[in-house]
Image (cartoon, rainbow, N blue to C red):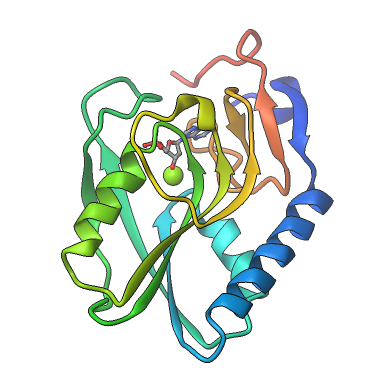
Length: 185
Ligand code: IMP
Ligand code: MG
């Protein structure tokens, strides 16, 4: 795997800006759910750093659970429109206030499938919190109740987002220089 510094075109959102926005989102969520309890659902694997940091700024009592989905059909970086659950929740969400936490909404197909599936389990409420929104690429209509940043149509990595599974740990969101990047064989 190449050193990320050799494939980083630019830092799109630096650590300070990310953390500031996450504090704001946490405060907004805490106010909206004040007096209630909440279930945060992290969509693996990209949502992990975001959910962890966000939860530290949510002052209402909350639980956490995790699920994984994979979209099939299409190429690696294209969503086909259907997501298959590869790891389901441990929690029964019926009657609960649920907040889905995602790293990025691109075509919107992943989150649209997840929402559709979770609705059938009859939560009391079901909302979406996405750190990044690549609006230009949207194909499915999805509600985003809490949005960190709108970003341009560029391939990004870091802070949960991977470059062929690497570099999710970076504290910032960077743009990949696709001319320099060579995917591992
Ligand atoms: P969607 O179904 O097209 O909205 O796909 C969303 C998923 O694609 C995200 O959860 C990410 O895992 C992945 N994804 C979309 N854009 C990027 C990107 O720029 N970098 C890394 N992963 C991305
Ligand atoms: Mg993801």
